[in-house]
Image 1 (cartoon, rainbow, N blue to C red):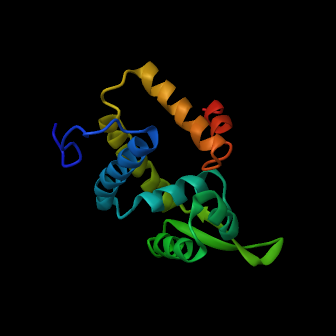
Image 2: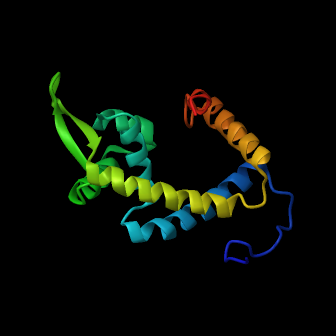
Amino acid sequence: MATTETKHAPHYAPTAGVLLLKIGKASERRFEKALKPLGLTPRHLGVLFEVQACPTSQQALIDTIGVDASKLVGLLNDLEADGLIVRKRDPEDRRRHIVEVSAKGSARLEDAKKTAMTVEEELLAGLDADQRAELLALLAQVADSSGIFEGCVERLKLL
């Protein structure tokens, strides 16, 4: 299946960083297109994944999601307006808000996970199960060791 992302072979030997960048951008476009009917973006999905795994404060989300505070507030406002998250005052520190996924958000997240798995299947169609597992382990190691996603290797071990 030819897509706009598969134009032609490069005229140079690409580095791992260049390949990761190109694959990342193409993946983001595919995820954006697939999630649009659900009213979500890849960033919304990232927030929902993180908050479902561990309800947390807005400040902690800034660190774990990796977006600046103003962008995070916009994402949270979108998700709250759609009824997908709730922000509650932290009983231990009334100045903080704890973000949780609502029941509606959990249902939408399940649909989004199925959609994301379909996109991932398309992206990784050229790899067998062992190669996919190896790729995931290697990417987790890169993400962890570079500080992009600390603790990624340990999180994979929990799966």
